[in-house]
Length: 461
Image (cartoon, rainbow, N blue to C red; front, side):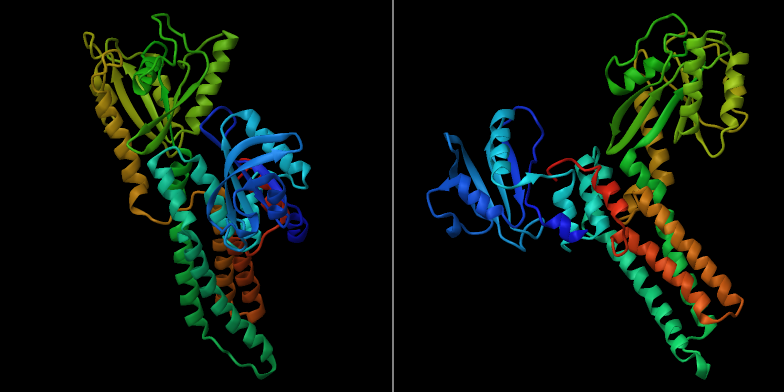
């Protein structure tokens, strides 16, 4: 696979389409310098241009000059891909960069696939697979938390932990393999109780990584905060107030919101995905029923549920039906919020305090209490997930699943040790654990895994 991928010279526009000050066209592979030499005319000879030096020149085709550009030359192995590589900084705009790319393709390169520059970086040994994945996460980062998590992974902090755990397993597995070589002599190279202690210590390391995934998922995807309640309690008004924009339609007519509306909000570096849902109630209207079905689906996948009440109205059967519905969703953080504090307050709050749940008060119309609401949900996330205190967190579901397989294999190895079986049975599960760890950093991988990972990258990266 590696040879076939690396045979071609690839090119792509690495900047987003549209008008701008500059566009960047990248070129990597064995023919890179030959192609660049044909189309780029600097004042000095191309071969004399030093690596990593920005050089002014002009791009020409058979019809004449296309653009005046700055070209940067990266000689193998000191480049992003560890191949000969060139970056052409041309004037911004769709037409100029496309003309240059077409000229490069006409001279023997092919268009790069999504993520192919980073794929080559991985295949050529410049970075392991977890660091390559961090490149895509870094590009997609939307908040300080997600940025820092991506940078830590790109710096190799996760790789270091995985490599350390693999080394510990290899040490134990190698002693067992050595026993197999001397099976006829019945020599025990590692005491089984000592082996149990070693594997349990490794299990602890793996478990410590696994438990970071919830924080890592939030760092990468954000906190899903779902606003629910009966019709006309101010759910859409709260969403509009939080995002400082009129994103949802607000009227005095109950049932205005018939579908879920999701917006994103950065609260002090943490991404919140705020979902405004249809009011939950009994109805025969087919459209309203579909909106309620979607609202209930969002409740089940929420990280935080905000149950909104109308402080200017008494609690009714509809309110308690929604309370019961939420209580039937396991392991959910629920925040009860009383809205419309700008009106005469009628709601009996003591009836909401049965479960000792803290109740916040706001006026979505005037904005009072909204800052306290934001601070409360932020502290709920930071307290429970401890995002800022951990340098190494697992942000990828692929890594999370691999670590769970590692833990399962180690547990089976422990079971085999306790059964006092032959070392080859223990060794099988230790090798399985090694393979699962290898999937994270790319020591063990498949073409399907690579295709799935790099197909999610943007073209040109």
